[in-house]
Image (cartoon, rainbow, N blue to C red; front, top):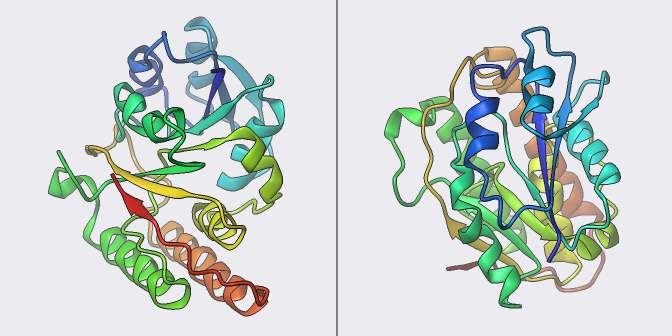
Length: 238
């Protein structure tokens, strides 16, 4: 199975080395770091450690993920992972297992399970995350608990979904489109730790508010745009 890892970065020089070093080399075919105008040497560190670095000057978290997805070299599975070392790359087998076993098309790492350090997720981010997950449960009937960035999907499924969201709405687009198209979305527990360096989202009021707006507005918009097909595909916890 060919596994491509996509890591969006912006000034993650303090963390990117640890992220890349912790990836299980026996499971990973290629690592793509999509860098957005870093000025601290992040691209150079990533390149020295064997990652393929792709500059993406256009802003947007989702845009960086889409750029990496378009550049992936014939993968069977694509994994998305942040470059701040809050998720543990060594837990990649947990994320891949349901896909390898044929039990899932998309897997989501829930940060609300094991090994979660309370301070790792700021209270306002945790509150907004729970509200968004609750809204998705209410509108779509999806038993989702988290919108974490550590996730994986079969490459053919991701191509079928036609992902296009360039903003932080990316966090829900894959989930909602996957469910609406009848794909199996499976949630697995992953550990979560305080990030290294300052967050570009939760570290600022503007970043937090912007991310919340994109996520909630996209959730509501998809609800009213959905077809008459039954969207009630529920997430299954492993």
